[in-house]
Image (tube, rainbow, N blue to C red; front, side, top):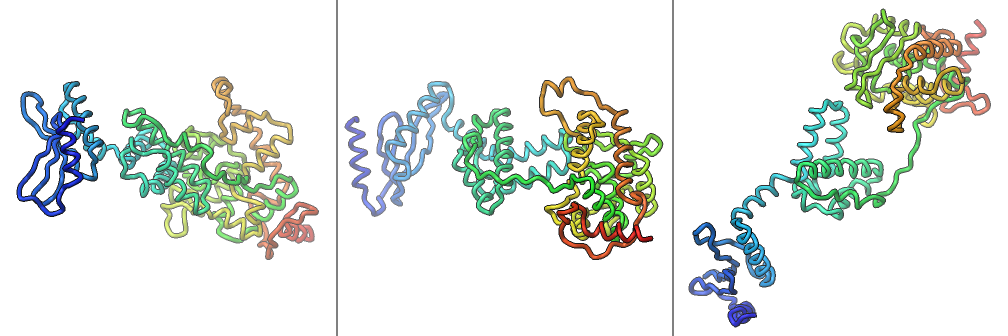
Length: 433
């Protein structure tokens, strides 16, 4: 330490509390100075020359910035000067970049990218919904300054509310934003990688589905006798006949159906895997659709809502109808029709497993096999869907028509016969006529 440095250290320890009469400048060498303002404020300054001009750089105030920190800042500025850069200009650039490259701004760019790639509105809405949980904690921070502990704080705010699955999805979504930032040279690492295993794993429960043929017959008879909205009854029948994802059917439009070719083409924007999907229409499905068109065919949607023909029924309509029929959420769901069809079609042994998977619009998990197994199995799927419709028709008096109004329904299945008690009462009543 030089004599001048020892002087500045002694001065820092003995600075008077009262304001000085004039500005004092104490030098530490290498251009580093401590300015003592008449008001008593103490500020670090760095004097240097760049491009033939004398310049001054503000480093911070004492004691917030210690002597050791001030010297480190001076040395960093000297390194920039040696590399031919102006420290003041570099600081302005870094500050502007830090303000621009916040997590929120880069997340917005990532969402715009998803929109340009044609991702479904529902997918984009989910991403934005998840990101909203992160913004209060990391939204306005420079993305390069966000560490794993900070991300974990944002995740804990969701997890502590018991939303374990949402917290895990949020971690994944934050990770995609960081990887986008890395790809665009605005971040160097993804802090979410270090958080693997840090969150509580949710208990995974499969959607309830009926997989017993007799119990399925009871469900179909209950649907046939459902005395709610005719459009809801038709939707449940079509779920049983075609087993699409509920959202794919709920948002279906009439222009997607070709009755002459007996085909429903679901556009890729509404498909989970972002690929258009063809569904063969059985004679029974066409019968339900033609009857449905008589009561809801005035607009573009198959299932318009009660309040507006331009908006579809809610995503809870079909499950609510099942509850009204007496099926609890642990017994049957709208999505469960897919598991029902998959189980019974595979168990019957009549159809190639790949044909069943294609009809369910599932994608092969094995990358190599997926690259070669591109067959659509269309002809087999046409026969399979007609067989499935006829098989279901045998379990109910008329899957294309409407049965008698249902009596009050019990809340659970009869475990002895696995047939829903309501359906049994309906079936016995019909046998006596």
